[in-house]
Image 1: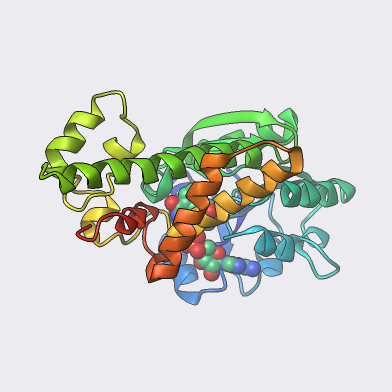
Image 2 (image 1 turned 120 degrees about the horizontal axis):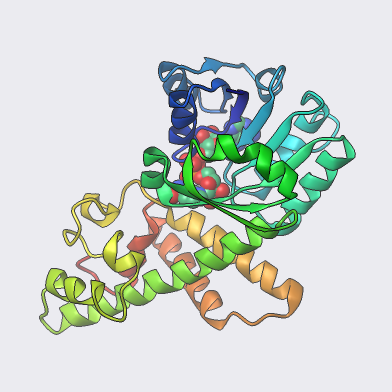
Amino acid sequence: MSRIAFIGLGNMGGPMAANLLKAGHVLRVFDLAPAAVAAAVSAGASAASSAIEAVADAEVVISMLPASRHVEGLYLGDAGLLAKIPTGALVIDCSTIAPASARKVAEAAAARGLAMIDAPVSGGTAGAAAGTLTFIVGGSAEALERAHPVLSAMGKNIFHMGDAGAGQVAKLCNNMALGVIMAATGEAIALGVAHGLDARALSQMMAVSTSRSWATEVCNPWPGVLENAPASRGYSGGFGNDLMLKDLGLAAEAAMGTGASIPLGELARNLYAMNSRQGNGELDFSSVIKLVAKDA
Ligand code: NAD
């Protein structure tokens, strides 16, 4: 069992930390939000008053923060965490951030003699709670082998995509496809409903036909079709529209870096931006259906 510093206890980090505790690891946690720290403490973690205090005697450091600027801000610079992490510790960043940021932080970690992997996740808040996340990893095979017991307490699939930053590239590919599929599925269901079809019957057909996807089977965007989907609870919880917007922006940046063309990804990014401007940024990303269906 490892002494783990866990930083960032939000919708994802909170339940991930709880699963590490259940597996018997010893956790020292920090989040800027006191309520998030309190929840982890009631699950058995001990609270640190800063990230630096959290890593003081850590063997493994895990971060789960919103975006690149938070991760760079945490680790880099004279006052950054990399200067404080004990020599020999393993650093695992699970946030979804720009591949270039992940490489920058991993290089700075290596310069300090610390092994680091980028390990963004797929599976949503339900996967985080159930301990069934997919980890999409970039970094050395040796570092991933050390991370394995910790990752497997929080997830069931681990994919090694390549060197530092490769996990982030693969995660962006996944989320770009997901963003496009969700918008397309919403549009299709809205078309059916506009013709008087029942959304549930239409979705049940699609879920076993050629347009089946996570959007039809798990996170259907029409309210009431799937009881446990965010759409059936006012689009609350789940994966925020603005996080999807962030990921599609990262995909666009990554495409520009190589000259790749992503016409559907760019279109989807605009749809999620429009949904955000309608005041739906905090809602689950399946609320993008609201752009084409007033009743949703
Ligand atoms: P969240 O906003 O719920 O949680 C982020 C937490 O980080 C917050 O509690 C915040 O207070 C804390 N934080 C921010 N800066 C900090 C700092 N400097 N020090 C300490 N704590 C700090 O976000 P989330 O939904 O948990 O997502 C986290 C990451 O996981 C994002 O990169 C997101 O894209 C990715 N992700 C989310 C989902 C999902 O379904 N929510 C799924 C897969 C991946």
